[in-house]
Length: 572
Image (cartoon, rainbow, N blue to C red; front, side):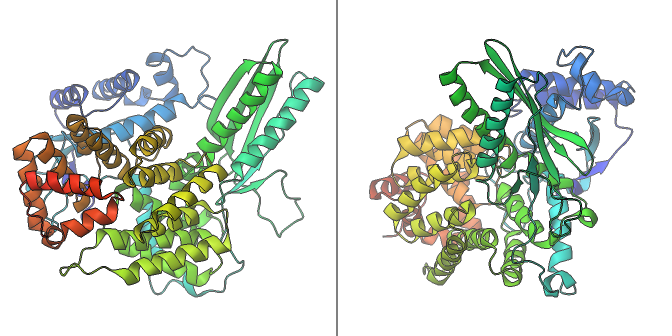
């Protein structure tokens, strides 16, 4: 399988003017979805590098010269540059997946620094690319697959090590009933003023953060560090610390997350507000919600910190933890070629740890993807696969009734089994358990929307997209479908063109419907031809495939009518 990097050749002596021209192409493109500050960030680091001043590109100089921070800026306590660099990397990835697919020069900012790297597209790999949304046949690989490259590289290395039959990890005796989880110690907040009132506030905030963070079941949240002589409990890898300052009328809270392995601050934020009893009570809950969501959610700060975790220094049973990372990496792009390896990894994980609820839940979600994205030539329903997904989800929920991946899997399995009311009831109940889980929020919003409750579900998807740092393949496609049923076909097309999953046939099916209904005949025919060429078995069974995804017959009929306008024949 080709990796994105294989389409480019490192070239240290690229012409400076060619690189500046590439920068201009990026900055002038509507597909470069970045803020003004991120435009300035990219311009600055590229110009510094091209001018031979790459050694000056540091977090401090970027903060001062680009973001206008003062001379006292400290990158250890203010992570603004690192956060904006992450946003910029994702914006560049999205650009090269869309209008930049044929650009001659690739500009990237590798993780671990801010110095840009310039590469030339290898001429031997160049081939005519189709119009937007029309990918190469399934035997080909698009030029730049949706990746968070270092995460996916690390995950693939883990999978290779894990899945190899000679690996003793799978066959060695398990030390515990569950594998290790990231351990997070929430320390008592400092009280620099030494006042009794600040001490009360600090205690209350710590308790609220512990409660909210503990809702993420794949973290082990600790209120106190283990004793040095207690060998039964591993020390925490992450520490939440902070301080509380009070004045007569206001409070200020500073919170930071420390990676104990490196001693570095990997996230920090400050919160302030009026010190009125009613207002502060609400503020305290909102602060705890913000902290726990930033740290604990899928693709959040802790997840991102483990992207570069050295396997040799990893927690016990890294293999199972690596399986969960590999699942979420797969979900970023829904790459069908990665699914079998992820499935195999999780199947071996539950075999070794049969009481690990998260692994059962994630395995169920993989089975559901098998059910909804694999198409049989005769149109037969793959009922055994769905039943397998239901069984795995029920087992996960029985093992840990509060586990969100288990609940997400069970909700999806019930929906595709036709038990729509039960699925939505479970979704509503689950969201109350952990409203900070943006991954679940988006999935529940999608289930609401496709069941016909568009006005309720679509805003949830939009909120989740804004709050979740891991932009998965589903968000834009879901919002495209929302715009379609809202009658805004131009906006639907805009959303769909941002979808980072060019090999998923369902997204091409949605594209054919959107362009067909919007009167864009050329694009609609391109999408129809792609489907007929690459997935004729799907085209033969359009009625069933559409109906199994949309809960209301009138919604399914609307999509089928649009597909007819795109030139597809709908069998009776």
